[in-house]
Length: 553
Ligand SMILES: Cc1cc2nc3c(=O)[nH]c(=O)nc-3n(C[C@H](O)[C@H](O)[C@H](O)COP(=O)(O)OP(=O)(O)OC[C@H]3O[C@@H](n4cnc5c(N)ncnc54)[C@H](O)[C@@H]3O)c2cc1C
Image 1 (tube, rainbow, N blue to C red):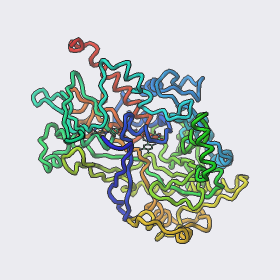
Image 2: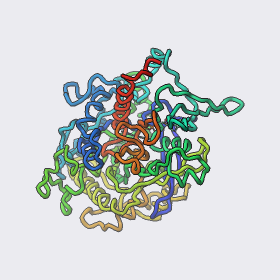
Image 3: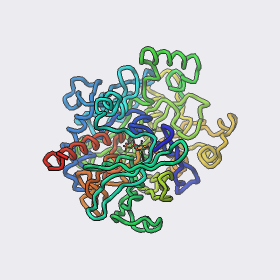
Image 4: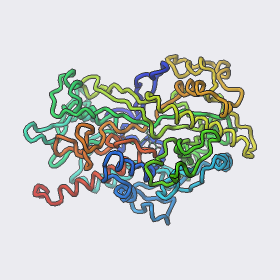
C-alpha cells in the first residue's frame, strides 16, 4: 500500500464497553518488520504439533518446520547452540535492557515456580518459564528487518536483471484466466503526479500473495475469491467461492497491569532531555544504549490449566501429564506475561509516572474476528471485526493471568528491590476514568483528574473479584498487533483457503505466504513463524518448478 510507514485503523467496538481500537501495520518493503518490536520467538514445538494433530496438517509438525526456522536465522546470541541457525539472513541477538529491576523480576518469577531460561527459542526448554528474548537487532544497534535480511540494496542490485521492485503502489486484484483458472498476473494501482495509473504485471509461473492477514483477503475478494454473499453484495463476479477468506481472524490480546518505578529503571527515563541526548549520541556513534534496544527483553509463558487455582504456582505435573514437556500439544502456552519497562496503554498517554508493565496476553484465544470488504476500491480499508475477548471462554485464562500479574507485582515489591513499586494501573481503578481515556472521549483528563483514577492500594490477587477484573480487562484490552489466520491452511477447501503447500484452493498457480495462512495463531510472536512460512513457500515453488518444462521459457 502506498503512503506512510505505518497506518492506524479503527476497528469495530468492543462488545461490552464502548471503545475504539487502533490496528497498525508497516507500509514499507519488509512490511511490519520495519516498525515492530523486533522480538524473535518461534513459538514452542507444541504449537506446530498442535497444527499437525488438531488439524491434520502433518507437513507442519515441529520436525517439518524446525529446519526452516534454522534456515532463516543467524542467532548471534547463541553461537554454540545446535538447535539455532547461524547462516541464515535474519540476524538476531539478545539485548537485555540495562535496568536494575530485572534480577528482582526474576526472583518474583521464581517465587511462582517458573524455571529461568536464557533462550526463548530453545525447543528443549520447558513449556512454561521465564525466558530471555532474542531481537532482530544488528551489531550496530539497528533494526534488522525482513527487508534488510532478504531484499536489501545489495541483493536488489545483484538481481537487477530479473528483479523489479515497485514501491508506492497498491495491488488492486489478481488476473485469473477464466478457462484454466490460473493466476496469470496482478493489477497494481499507483498514484501518478497528475492522475491515477493502473498497471498490469504478468506472471510467468506463479503469483505469491503476502499482504498480511489484513491485506491479503481483500485482494482475494476483489479478484472474486471469497464468501459468495459478500462478493454478490458488491457485484464482484465469483471465481471461487471460499467462505474462509477473511474469517477466523485471530490475534493476541493484552491487558496491561502497570506499576510505578524510578524513572531510571524504565524507558520513561528518555523523557529527560539530557538523558535522551546522551542516549542518542550513544546510539548514533556507538550503536549502543537504550535506543539500540527493544521495549522488552524478557517474558513469561504459561499454560493456565497448569497453574494452581489457589496458589497460582506452576504445577509441573497435572493429571499424570508432564506440563513442562514442550512437544506435547496439551502444553501449548495460552498466556504470556511480558515484562515491559514502559507504559503499555498503546492509544493514550498516561505518563504522569514512570511505569513498568506486566503485559498479560492471551496467546491462544478462543475469540475470533473477521474482515469484509467495505467497497471494491483498493484504497478503502476493509471493515475489521476484531476478536478482542468476544468469546467468554477467554475470560477464564485472562482472569487468572491478571491475578498472576498482581501476584508477580507483589512478589517483586517484596523481592528486595530497593524502591517501592506500587501497582497504579490495574483492576480496581476508577471506571469512569478508564472510560474517559479509552472511550470516545478523545480529550485526556488533566493531571489532577488523572491522579484520581490511579489505584491507591495494591489489589490483593487472592480476594479481588472476577467482576472487578473483567471491568478492567474490558476497558483496557488491546491488540498485540499479531493479526493472523484470515486465509487459513486446511485439508478441507470448505474450511480453509490454502492447502499444505500454501496453494489457494480452486485457483492454480496462486499461493499465499504471510501470517494469514496459520491454521491457528502460534503462542509466540508472529514474525518468526511468518518468516518460516515464507522460507517454506520458496522451497515449495522451487520443488514445483524444478522439473517442469516451462522452467526453460
Ligand atoms: C507495531 C507492531 C509491533 C510488532 N511487534 C512484533 C514483535 O516484536 N515480534 C513479532 O514476532 N511480531 C511483531 N509484530 C507482528 C509481526 O510484525 C507481523 O506478524 C508480521 O510482520 C506479519 O507479516 P506479514 O507478512 O503477514 O504482514 P505484514 O508484515 O503486515 O506485511 C504485509 C505488507 O503488505 C502490504 N500490503 C497490504 N495490502 C497491500 C496491497 N493491496 N498492495 C500492496 N501492498 C499491500 C502492507 O502495507 C505490508 O507492507 C508486530 C506488529 C506490529 C504492527
